[in-house]
Image 1 (tube, helix red, strand yellow):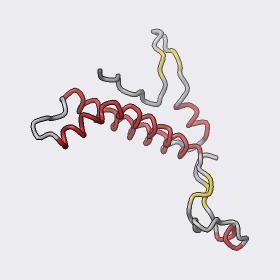
Image 2 (cartoon, one colour):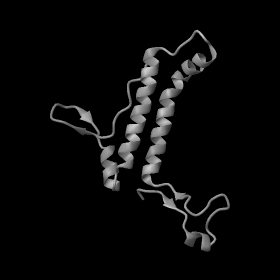
Image 3 (spheres, helix red, strand yellow):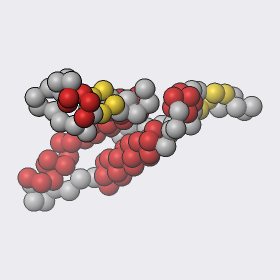
Length: 122
């Protein structure tokens, strides 16, 4: 299923809703939500190696995050947001599948519609 399935009044009437959930809460994550969770996890993983720069900048008065690190982190967040927008715009499972399908153009360049992550900084 592409979109999330939510708990309904009928589910409540049938006694199916767990105690910690309510009508309108997510019952089953749809494919779009699952893919967005993966994007968020990937973004967090890409940001983690440079997190120490941000922490140090908040603790040490005369330290600032290097410009290339700040730019990289902003780019990761922008790409994550762009991917989420692309995923949310899908109207069918086929649309979602196409985002992840790599193709090769006439010049031999392999790409997919879903944007790619920026190159990691070292």
